[in-house]
Amino acid sequence: MAIGAFVALVGFSRSFEQEWLRLYSSSGTDIAVVQKTFLNPSVDVSIEPRLTSVPVVAQVSPMLFNLMDLTPEVNALAFGWRADSYEFGSLTFLSGQRFENGKPQVIIGDALASTLNKKAGESLDIQGSSFTIVGIYRGGTALEAGAVILPLDQLQQLTSLQGKVSGFHVRLRPAPAGEAPDHYLKRAQKEIEAALPGLNAQSASERASNNQFVALAHAVAWGTSSIALLMGVLGIANTMAMSVFERTREIGILRAIGWKSSRIVLLIETEATVLGFAGGILGLFFGWGSLRLLSMLPQTASIVSASMDTGHLLEALGISVVSGILAGAYPAWRGSHLSPVEAIRHD
Amino acid sequence: MTSPLLEVRNLCKSYDEGRIEALRGVDLSITAGEYVAISGPSGSGKSTLLQLLGGLDTATTGEVLFQNAALGSAVNLDTYRARQVGFIFQAFYLLPTLTAIENVQVPMLALDLLPSNRAKRAESLLREMSMVHRLNQYPNQLSAGERQRVAIARALANAPSILMADEPTGNLDSVNSARIMEILIGIQKQRGMTLIIITHENEIACCAPRHIRIRDGRIES
Image (tube, rainbow over all chains, first blue to last red; front, side):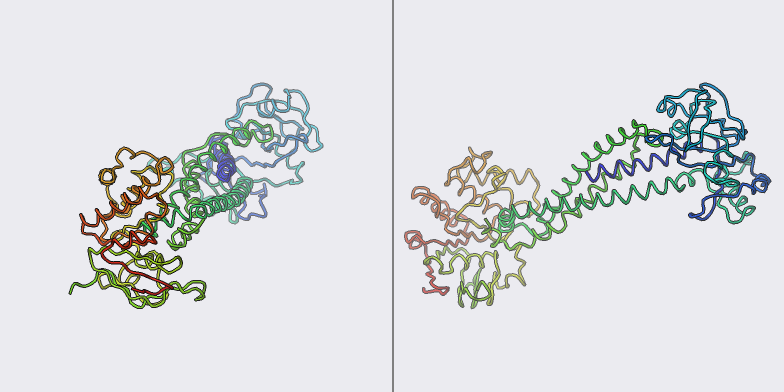
């Protein structure tokens, strides 16, 4: 169960992070310019001209995002873009068209449209304000497919963040010939940060891993699954302790016929490790099943996918093996220190 | 004069924080290749003495010497039990989830022998015990006499220099008792092993070349 919880929770948070990364790469965003401080996540939109004037910068898209309640059961990521943002390039319109700045219009992803059973031309309430759906799009990622995109000024008004944005998405000019892409990216980050002191210029992958939603998801996932893992370790330890107790005489016989304490430790630790590993395999199935379920639920379909990478699977199995070893440590020590003659007399 | 294989000096063993004195200053020496029977009434300390000689327990005071080296300090008890001593119990104490041949191989794991060598040696020992037709039977499928023969084969697994048997015929009928004793004495003679048997049966004790009587934790004769 503990490994299942780890796989599901950490898989969920990593899947969430991957979706953010895909969102940036599908729109061609190279760098996100955001606040350095965690508690003040918004940036003043007035700095845009200074950012645009940095030589490496080709295009800038100020953007705002938040999680909005659309119905009592459904919430969705809401992005605020300008109508001329380059990020529209990653969307394919299935019906309708882009919105216009300043108007109470939205476009929604096809997954969200299906969940809400909405079409272009119908209205959508967002936190008490009514908007017209002017288009339905297919996005490059699950995050976009389940999102609502509205004019930046409209979202600023809804969230009382007039004049503020979550950050700026930046598309860089092509790297000069002969300069390695990694080196160019790092140089671009430094030039932007020099032009805009107090702000961070993060690559897409850095931004994907440390935006507030992802950071919170990681913290909750690891915190919760750590508690579950601790429970799992205690469970195995209890099982092994009972096993050693019930096999006291057997251990005494083994010691009497020549087994060293170290071999007794190896026996018990091997059993605990196998128990942990077997639990890990079961947990993987349980965790994958949970992720699959989450990817089908309307409330979470936009932010989780059921795919798990090999690294995550191996990490989960590794944790289950280590858990088994840790859990078996005390029972193994106890078993190896039993007096042979007292153990043999045990009923 | 040959130096003793096993020697016990002023051996005392007490339990329950000294309230029960199982052995009270026992002195004894046993030479290599000797066959010794130790007898005494119930509670006399004979099993305790054997357990201390076999390295299954440690003395309260006094010492047990193996080839002039003190057990538990100069001689590691685990190594001593693995390589020098073969123990046979009244209740057999075979591992119930292992077959006869697997039970015989268990002590060999302490010496890290190859699996093929272990299996060959185990089969050979069971053949010697006339148990080759029962190699793959579990203990609950064997008679009491057969179980004790498997236990003897197990005790011989690592070619020990000393065979110790605590009431080996205690759970057997007279026919099987005689058979087991015949096997033990035969092994002792063929291999020149030291054999120490605890028994309360006079007919077994009296047949041993050396018979030690113990009472109230002390050697009488």
